[in-house]
Image 1 (cartoon, rainbow, N blue to C red):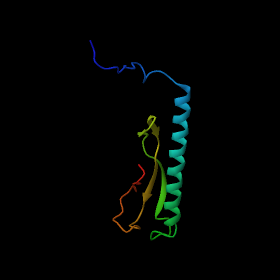
Image 2: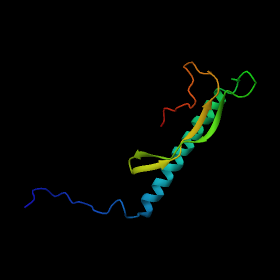
Image 3: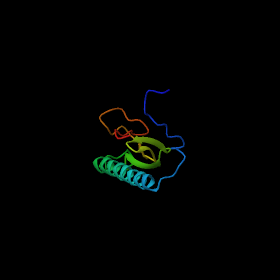
Image 4: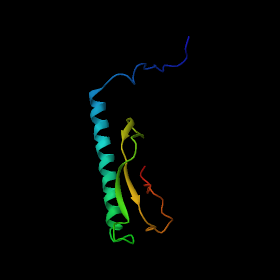
Length: 103
């Protein structure tokens, strides 16, 4: 006989719960908006930086592959924005893709 009262919840990952999906969608939207804001701020801060041809040194470059971020309600998948640094415009050596601290 078992000496604990823990109940295993099998199939929890496969069932759809509308409330949980609503919360996940909200979390996904908040994360997306935060990333958009972070990229906009970075591009704004570096808007004066130009390469030798006069083009913007840092540009937005689509999205990175979708990834799962662990949240309190479980994993939430998001697509992170991608930027490209065309010249050494930051205080540290420039890599082709700038990484953000939030992801």
